[in-house]
Image (cartoon, rainbow, N blue to C red; front, side, top):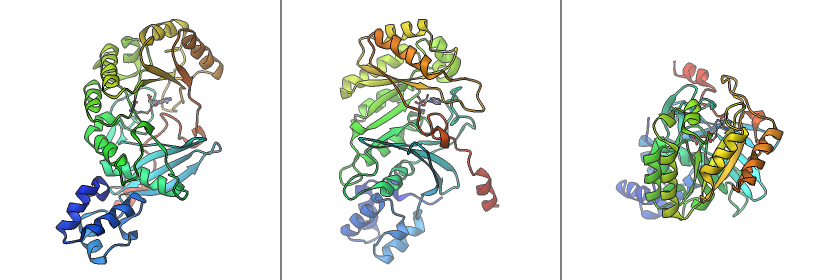
Length: 350
Ligand code: SAH
């Protein structure tokens, strides 16, 4: 596989162009083109420089393969990587702007029992440029004049971002860099199943994104039933890491809690959850489980979801119920998967 220009910061791109004997303004032209989501061959730069670069670098490392449009306005994107792997992204349109859900790995090795992304295990990590290019592509398609096409980013696509820490950290640096697409850290949410040591590392990074923890149960025993990672880290350790994160960034943290029938959303669970989280600088985001056909777990009705939310509210927690978006295009939480078009890829290679 060739290298990826979108992996580079502006400073790195500048040294690269200079090492080829190019003048600094060419680096700026190149960088601006990349940040507008263009392939190398579409960027108006000196042809000699382009020819040199294309010997070593991919022309277009994240190609938009297909777009599915939901009746609710959201869009699912299939991106083809240079090695033929596919990752998915989703764009959700709200009154205040567009939120993009980004993938950080092809597949996932966390094994959560309710999630489709992990069904085939981890195929590979994405590079920071492959994560960034997903945003650059969708942003370019939705840009209106000076108005950004992507205003908010959630790292909630396939993969566990903190299991691919270095690439995720570089992505966060490059996507928030001034002069680039420059999305504010406040508008970025990173969701993790709770890899404790990496939460500390994230806190030290100095990019105060919103930290989101997939909790899904108020007890370690309950979490262990649906999330293998809970065998490694306890809720107490996670909460300690969240407090450290809060201390470093001043950002309130968020718990995601997917409501699974018969598993985690009865009255005793509501009481346990309230006792666990009360008084903490946090918010709880409830999600009705999106059923995945290969999985046995079932979701709850809207009424049951509101009942559980009411109990948490009465207990004094800050809590919202997330709208289900994009389920008709397989774009809802936990529905993203790497599986699509493995076959055509194999055929084209053989
Ligand atoms: N690896 C990260 C990002 C995953 S996806 C993490 O674990 O947080 C974002 C959220 O969707 C997580 O909270 C995840 O637990 C949740 N999720 C996964 N599958 C789901 C499903 N089928 N229904 C509802 N939520 C789901």
